[in-house]
Length: 219
Picture 1: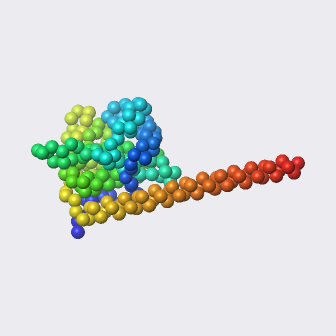
Picture 2: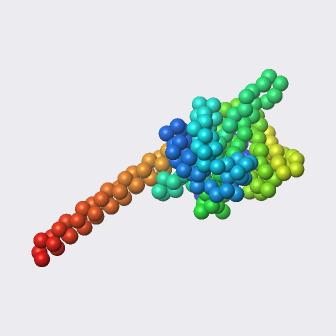
Picture 3: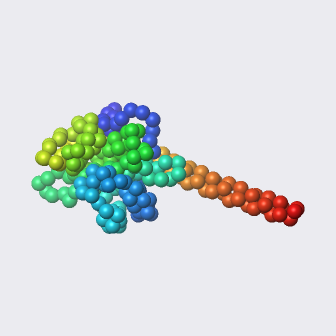
């Protein structure tokens, strides 16, 4: 049987879940945490806070797909936007990929993992081409595209990359389903852990308060 994702990287499983409208606040927090240089590389211009908020408010979760990686604190440390392009009769269906990773989460291959996840989803949605539009100085993004086997065309300060996608298969559909289930379960466990830690913190605060009260009454 063919691999569901020919560009898949080796290494441990990284839970990547799809994001919906309920995650707008976390998406905004993630993008606003990017410094000026990272914003420039992600958007192709020096996006200010207001422009980022407008971008987040304008995300169309019915048309496009957003994927994210969360840490144990449920902080969105890496995310990808897969924007499906308007399909024309004389052009193959395609999708454009954009990604951002917080500095503290760099060096773990998250950008590449998100690209792999997006490729599988794009295939399953019938896309034939994956596009990446990046500044030529965005070496990390260009490296991801090159390793995936994309064709790169440089035009001055900008680089266009496109990867031709094979048709969806049973493997690719099952792979995406399983990966999403694992990511959803991982997210729920992290939510439960956060709630439990919050409960412990409240309990400790109550105990400290009771101890202080006893100490004062014994004076």
